[in-house]
Image 1 (cartoon, rainbow, N blue to C red):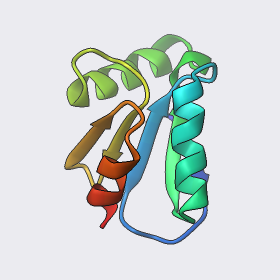
Image 2 (tube, rainbow, N blue to C red; image 1 turned 60 degrees about the vertical axis):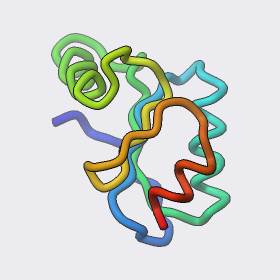
Image 3 (cartoon, rainbow, N blue to C red; image 1 turned 135 degrees about the horizontal axis):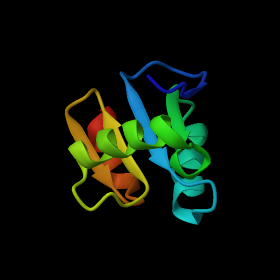
Length: 93
């Protein structure tokens, strides 16, 4: 499994953000989670290579067939595609 970067904060369940290092909406998603004081993990898919890149792209595709970013997965149940603070707040309760 690819090493994700963990951000410390209040635990509201498992939150994983798949993004790109150059994506403004991805940065806004992480900033929103930071502002909410939540713990989450993220990976910048474009910074991976080889087998790691393929593994993460498969994982993203499992949640989002278009493989677009950001793709945020909450508790392995809810997927939020794009930057949508309302859906994120609903998913984390």
